[in-house]
Length: 294
Image (cartoon, rainbow, N blue to C red):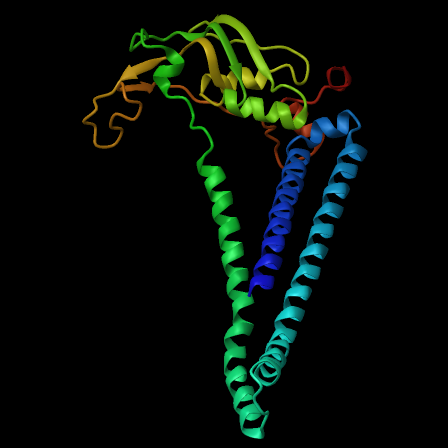
């Protein structure tokens, strides 16, 4: 039991490392699929393939280590009953000075055979407990993640309900909380992406264009308006409305009765018709070769 416990503790450590490696592999594949356009344009395919291959090899190595550990556990579980029986009979004869008879031998074998069923089942119980404990740790780490900022923490306590202003006032925004950013900086070796000193207002009822190179923070600027980024200083201007705390549907969701009014984020996605490239470019307009080639 004690040896199996030590071996299972090693399996738990390897299994935890395997889960971390699997998470990294899935995250890398997700990033590749989500940003496949940029990956193809910048020629990063070979880099991503190399990263995924290394993570896959690491995961296979952990699986092999787990298989070897379980092989040792089952080997010990299979040999331990015979070893314990032999040790017991040796102590009975050598230490206590008793005479070994057929009655004692066969009775001992019968008793240890009954106990063996329980001892063989114990590694499986430890295995279930190990996997359950590891799953609980993963759930705990997820539940310990910082919550999103409340609406009043982003718009400020002096926000006027009914205002139609949209923008930022001396805002500094980053992905994740300050604690998360510090942890990621230690692991990755580089700070998180941050938008600093934002002071702008979008005209109400007008069309605003945000221009910039890839990765400059255009989408992050829009995601910051809906609370996806963490506001570390400054203020965000949003059209808010005062909601009654007795509302059976909304209630007092933010603690101050504030709610975002008439705002939505639509991600950039190409809308293509089930037609040829030319028909998608023309989009119902008559074909003009000169204009089309321009």
